Image: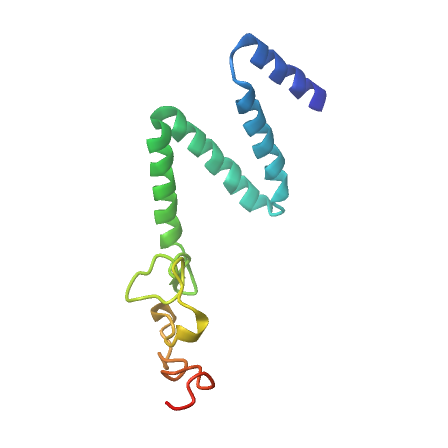
Length: 135
C-alpha cells in the first residue's frame, strides 16, 4: 500500500498537479496522526485539519487565522468543573498571576480568581524571609 501512495505522489509531482513540498507536508501530517493514541482526539484532529485545509483554500492565511480564532473561542467556552479550559491563559475576570507572562514563583502571592478559594492569599507579603532577615 505504501508503494502505491509513493507512485501516486510521484505521478502527481511529475504531472505538475502538486509541488514536492506539499507531498512532504501531507506525509508528515499523516505520520503524526498515528502519534495520538485516543481515537476521539485523533478524529477531532483529523476533522479540524480538513476544516483548516478548506479555510486555507478559500481564504488563505486570513481563513486559517479566522479558524484558529473560532477554535479558541470554542475552547474558551468548554468548561471542566465550572472552569473554562483556557481560563489561566484567557482570564474571564480579574488579574491572573500565571500564564504566558508568569511572575517568578516567590512573587505569586495570590491564588487565581477562577479558583474561587476562601483564602485569596496563599503566603505572606515577603515570601522569602530567609533572604530579607531584617523585615
